[in-house]
Image (cartoon, rainbow, N blue to C red; front, side, top):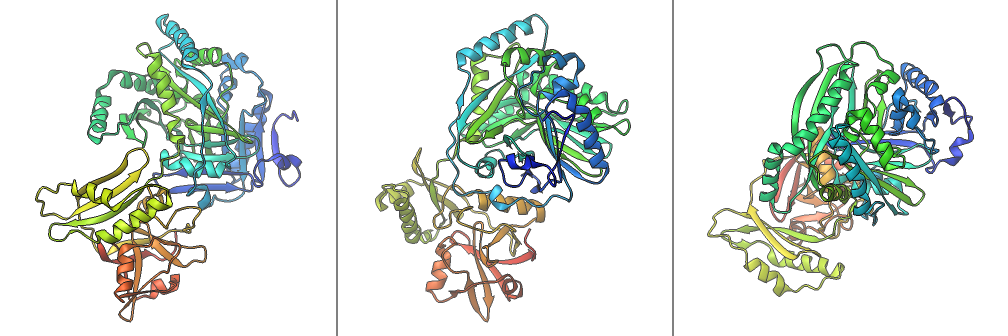
Length: 602
């Protein structure tokens, strides 16, 4: 179909038959604030595949937004060639949408839980499509352009490829906690599905205020905590990271100035460091006030694509990228986001982004090349950015208390549970090995209780660490999660390292409600447990705790049941709310008083 603009009405148009997912949707996920936006069942889809379709597409975007609709979807990197007249001749028709935005009739809902969490991450092996030798050839050409003064920086990227039968939600749920940023999500509006783990903001529009937050300057995390902290200090003073970042800040400041009131563009943050599980990233923030009401074509023409994924000067860098990379980036290095009915909007820079077509996976990686860059270092930095897609080795652990009077508390029970987990994971361990590592722990005559963590994983074997134990303020504040605790989202019969559901929901609700602990229900809305504690309610001088299975067989929980101080019974939400007293507890901290601060799951 070659219409001026494909505005796809699902009530009358057979395009829906070609969708990979049964129902088109867009998920946008902010792991820092805990807010998710799930757009589904679009009334229309606006899609432009050819430059001649863009005028009608942008007119449709403006029309639907002003009519009170949300729009959400993606823009491909190559749209930038069309929006800049001097680059239009570089666009090549590769049968790839320049933009695709769903039009949604109502406000977004919360994301489905299975799109955020999985207990069974799929294996995903990716291979770079450029060897170091091939990368170096392109790198050397960029170095010549840099020395000749054509550019100051070029962002060189290349694809990695692999295969997976996992669905887009399964892939996103498996790896989102490896890159806990603000701008992740999934776009499933037809054709290739886009799965983004981006930590980088392109722009956020709030009334007149425009905010951009580019990332430039990357270093891999170090295993040793002291060395990792020293690396952060080094990055703060490192000329290369600062120079890379400053070039892009200047570029974006100039881009934003063309749209904003004179003198309103400022840089409130410069060279801020953000830490993620696999890397440290340098960011800065640029802000300005829009000079007047702008339509969406004007805004994207002024800013797109983000300079952090092109280089500087932007136009010459984009010419060099098109010359050297040889293949369309597509949604990678483009943008994913949404537009609200009131004109507010938020779009990411689509780095750390997968494209999934059937079982085929493509993942782009890149870095900014400057004059003092080294090819091997830059190539390794690119591969580092794919590390977030490596499933973690799933070890198991026990956490218990060391007391200066009693020594290791409930050690025999913890040893038995640890050995049971070892058997389940086909690991050969003995009580003697456990005792040997525990005896090696030196508390140096400490009179302070310690938190002891006994762990095993395949890379480092059995290990023990201890740290002073600090009391929690009681009563603990409890919040209810809207997401049910299920075997598909979290393993509960052993204490394993993969605790994305437990830890992710606790962090989300701490941000939203200020709670200390989160409580989970099952799919029948019966209470189960907390993220690190067992739940108890008091009725008529008796403690009630939810029954097994489906919760961790807690050591303290088992002790209280054996002593006749607690019994197992089903606890409904109404029963929880009306109970005389709430408690949560574990072997490490004992029984702690608690209070429910929200009786509606969030």
